[in-house]
Length: 153
Image (cartoon, rainbow, N blue to C red; front, side, top):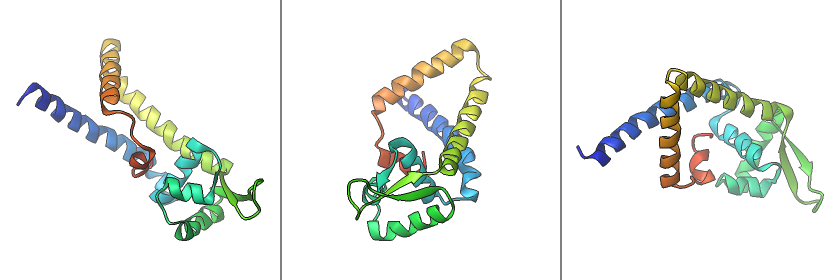
């Protein structure tokens, strides 16, 4: 195998390990919300309150059917609807404290597991991982929100 092939194989193995971290970190959240609902919470965490149509657009969803998902999130206490200050016809969707806490819990769990994994490495190895991952991220370019939302990240 070529050096690039070896690096690709090692990256593939590492990506599976990282996907495992992601899956474990989100598992308990999926006991109270669905993955698409969690994606809504992640978007609102990153963007702040959005008009219903803009939120649906971020998630590549049909606004009329998406409204039912938001209804379930409102009923669960994860988000709230508020009238738009700019237009009485528009509705703003915003996270509640519970919705924000759920996303933070998943993020904290993910961060803790990554810290535990990295804690098994020496300081020098951790720095090598940091440099390698930064190089990989730079080469890959920024993933779009749409790409990341598939996994609820």
